[in-house]
Length: 105
Image (cartoon, rainbow, N blue to C red; front, side):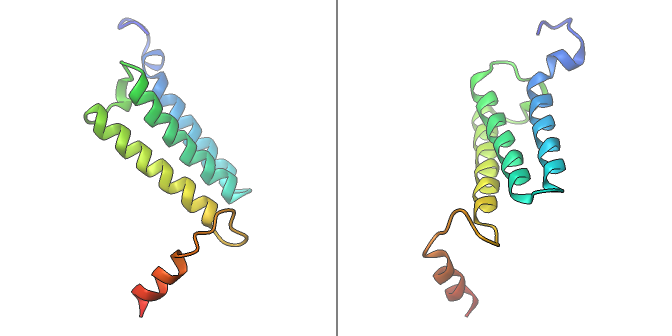
């Protein structure tokens, strides 16, 4: 959007990520796994937007590299944790239980 456009039009990348995260939090009230996947995927979308779009408004916090790595790492962590959540995890990491038992002992 041009510089003289209204603020919401200039901030569309941030509004998309915030809308996705808010929708995910609302979905979490009914089905936690689907809601957390939505939150994680919206953060991953923010990483893609920050990497691909030259002017992202207030979605840009630090340098492009730092923002992409931060949004990507947080989004990936949330998605993986949502897939591993109990009961009936979708994703099982076989050595994770051994690591937990080793660190707690």
